[in-house]
Amino acid sequence: MRTVFGSRCQQCWLRWNYSSTKQLSYSKKFSTAASPSVVDVSTLVTGLSNEQVKENPAIASYLAANFPNYGKSDESSSLSDEIVSEGMEGGFSTGGAAAAVAGKNEEVAVAANNNNNINNIREMFSFQRDPKREDGSRACQRLREDFLIPGLIYGADPIKGIDSSSNHKLYVKTPWNQLQRELDRYHHNFESRVYDMTVYENPDDTESGTVHRVMPRDLQFHPILNKLYCVNYLRYFPGRIIKIPIVYINEEESAAMKRDGFIASVNRFIPCVVEDGVPIPEHLELECTGLRLKEVVRIDRIIFPDGVQPIKKINDQFLIGTVFGKGEGAGPSDNAAAPTDA
Image 1 (spheres, rainbow, N blue to C red):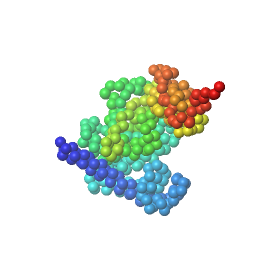
Image 2 (cartoon, one colour):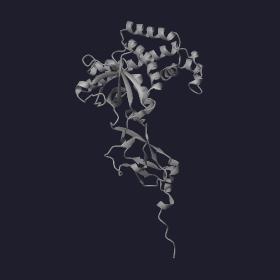
Image 3 (spheres, rainbow, N blue to C red):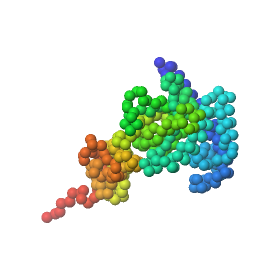
Image 4 (cartoon, one colour):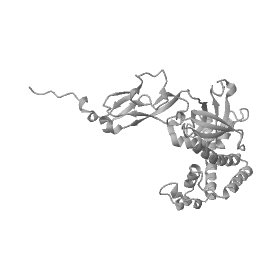
């Protein structure tokens, strides 16, 4: 059993290592063709020069992934054709998918600046996945080698008349860079965000896409390499429960928190319901003013924006955490009065 397990782990590692090598080679080609001299990179990142970008291909690939207008030139179209042709000659399907992903990144970035800014909803795109040919462990592994993360869209949406039956499940494959961009932005709060997911029929389709409003669910990572393995999406509609993270404000106004005190959190998220047309908050603020040592923090210190309410199951005794720390952090009222000599 040890030999079989070891060989399977080794095969899995080799596959991921191979895909990482292909991605690095693609990044180098992209950074070489997209000349940094077209745009002054110091206007994008403070303290960065064009010479540093030329010397380090990783910086060029980062700029190309995060700044859609970086490196635009007439060579971009010929670059895509070159990547596609090389991928076909080498027998890889990554060339066509990579070219399609690179073209759609710009479209999504422009649309995100114009739409859904009011409701704080970001945009992503994905492609439909054939449940017969692209389902199963081996088929999904081939998708990951092409930098496409398998998943499915499920759940009910009363607004569109969609129930929660299996007939309305949609198998999708999302480009890896789309998900990694959002993970780098929100980290552990990624599943607390709402997205407008545009689903295209295939990587070559650029027009006929269906928009689904979803929340990421069931993120799975590789147990050793910590790379994305699978991401599902739950349909979202106004009134669906969403868990919003908690952040602390005005910690300097608490004597206990200023002196190395901290809140031992019991609940880091609060299940809430957001009304239609109300911006979905990225976090809820917890007022720390006046917190004392060993004080129990409850939901009454949470500041809820207009149109955002906790679910009905949460009452006033909902526990956030308890303040712990050094004894010096307590205020004068926390210490017992010393006895005086008669």
